Image (tube, rainbow, N blue to C red):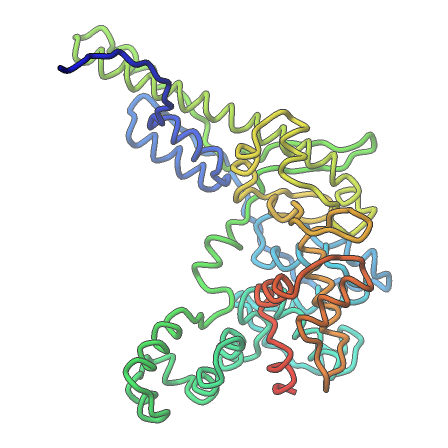
Length: 430
């Protein structure tokens, strides 16, 4: 005998508009612009009007000033510079002011492809350092920036990208630059006696190599379009936070199509649905801007010393702390900061870079992963060249000298992320 029971349960249904609202919160200002344009193409009731935006280029005129602090602070903070990502990292790096000044001068000599096509002697004189010191600073820059940046040639650019690969791959790249550029895989296979499997693995890797450090895909997505979502400005009475809406089109309703609503039943239904979509878009835009503003103000509260240029280090800050401060879910904060950029008196930052990884000091405080990476960079820069520091030694040094508890595995992960070779490979290279 079959019994029929009535059961009631609650479920959460992810509607298309809810899904789009979540995505809209994650969009950067340029992605948001493209999304609005696509919505306008699909919805005849949406009218958009682009705002004028001055896409200025970097001024590479050499700045001469004997005061290192004045030099750093005089650097432009524009949001959309091809060099801005590197300048941002240098400004917050944990190194002395003189090192920052020298690195900045080297960055400003990079061409638009990311190569350093200048005379070494002239650059050393400009930086007021010795020739051998210049090589060390260029190596440090290459660890900060995208793969291949600061290379003097295509060969060096490719070699920088494979320095963590096997000895065989590094050897092939060293002697086969022309063949790689032309895709002459058969010649490479014959010259180095590669099996089909080895050749296939090499080709897969080689196709990912960039012939320019600032390759097209990097330029379009990360450098030339590094527009700020939020701008923080310093005034006498404090800070002013404003959203960058210069790229976001004005969204209006098309009154003509709206007036056709009374023509017939089918047209009325069509217009009603599209008007509903228009209202959803405008409401979602307002909600995104409100959430972004609240998150930014909370970040400013935590990082005020950084934005006020009283300190170069990023203060420890977690998603949970911001969520608690403005009474929002951690997941909402995570979506809000994704792909977002802050322009401030201290430089231009990706929001996500201002948050602390789960690292702690012996005093029980959290410490930013960016700061730890800078420390690792400095220790490797100053290491005994004949006896490079192993990852385990770096872990021990960070604990003993900085009170930072970090495992060897984490040190390895950070070192690889900065594209620094292992201690064994660094010893071989010297």
